[in-house]
Amino acid sequence: MRPLATFFFDTGGAYPYYCALMFSAPFDKPLPRQGDPRKFAQQGVRISGYVPVDQLTRIQDLLLEEGAQARVDLTFGISEAGKLVVEGSAAADLVFTCQRCLGPVTVAVDAQIELALVRTEEEARQLPRALDPWILPEDGNTDFYTMVEEELLLSLPSVAYHEALCIDEQLLSSGEPVEPEPTKNPFQVLKQLKGSPKS
Image 1 (cartoon, rainbow, N blue to C red):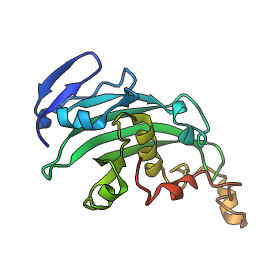
Image 2: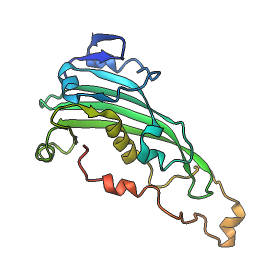
Image 3: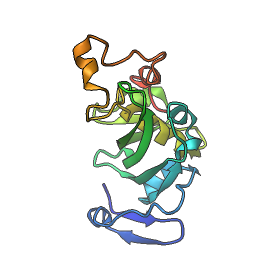
């Protein structure tokens, strides 16, 4: 990418891209919800902050507890191929229902983001396989939280459970099922997202 500027809500300055990766992004303020990613890419902007997970309703509906925050760091720029792109990460510690013991289990979810900014599905189909599309509205202004939510959804585990044994060992030798079937699969939403262009 070309050299990027840094945008942390109330401070700014020009830094080469390799330097921008050497310091920790601040997550003590909310990520801006609205913006024009294309303008950000042309200007080489970096934005960082937290996103309240209770505002990401598709994820919150899957969780056992409220109050989680996703830590988001996004760097906008222009790739060597001349594509407008955004790279970064979104990470959160989320509390699900363990599918073995049916108790709470905390899962560290880390989404690595690498998207090309496009206007149409036709542009999306022409992208190299290494880049996923982020289809933006014509006026450019878009909701960053929606994109963050989709990236986190795609990074959720297929099944949430404790790494350590979390049920009575006697159940393992009694012939009773170790992993009870959930009444409904909370991760069914992932199937709807995979293979669909981001918008």
